[in-house]
Length: 300
Image 1 (cartoon, one colour):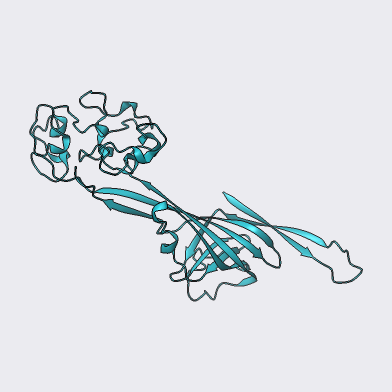
Image 2 (cartoon, helix red, strand yellow):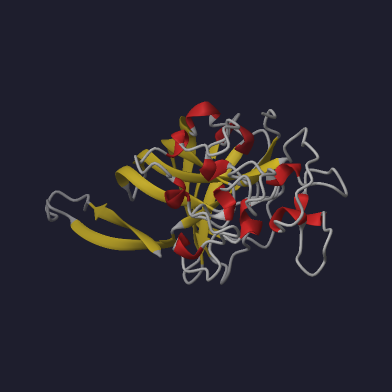
């Protein structure tokens, strides 16, 4: 997807008898929607294109990517910063993808024109969290009230949409076949004991009266899947003929996936060829925009 910025170049003739309205030339900046970032203690956001070879960049001092993604508890951060905006054209046929990432510019880069302006960068960072359990977050609104935060089947303090083990039975939700045919509809979710509660929300999957998490007769490692008395049937927690209780003492580790969306708008651009109140710079594509968080819920 392309973003276009139309630059109006007004050429005023200097002679008194010239046309007082001047000539207007429209030039199109046709860059991709995405942009990149480089820098450690300072940062430069940039995008490049070929045919013709051009770049847009904004350099900001005393700012790091780590600061930009430090969204805090609100999961959203808006960072306004003053920086130096540049539009450049080049005599090169093609430009390197890491054009602004070297402390010493390449001698092969031939700048044809360089327009510069102070401007304000408005950086918006949005954090999205997910448990990657195979169930879309929207379908983990068990009570249907539109609030994902108040659906916590196992009462471990982690809402279902972030909980890799929704029912707290120490079998990961993704391993309990919540959507066997992968169509995004959970009406075919595995229900071993046929009690109307799908296994991923059922703390006693085989209905033998022993909690799934307590059916670790072989190895007590918070993983009932590897405790098998009858290999023809499968794990004990899915075998109603095996009802031996070894009380669990802990939940397994939970991994929450973090994804940061960083967008940028640049305001107050004033160049010889351009006066722009606001320019949508696009979406940051960079390493360091995803992470994981490990949580061990208090056992209850």
